[in-house]
Length: 109
Image (cartoon, helix red, strand yellow):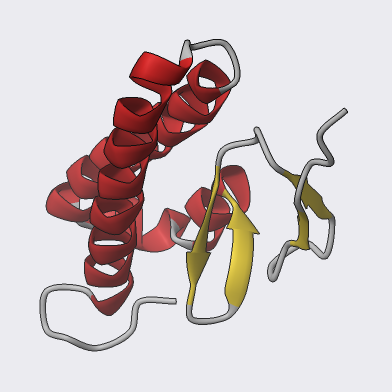
């Protein structure tokens, strides 16, 4: 049986287990819900940030789905799913960093 990766949430200190929706930012790994809580004040004041964060969440959901599909797909399709997942991971990292920096380039978290 495959061992799931685990991280410690930089915000709440709880365990993050591979398969949950989470992201990495300047402080380390963070549960998605913890990130939303940390950014709550900013989100309600900035509709653009809220929109980007919602899109970022869906990208992360796609990463989780791709990882699940890697384990059930045939060898013929698995490599394509891995390629898609890696593209999603790169896009998610870029977008999460943009959200964290905010429109002025200063950190929001």
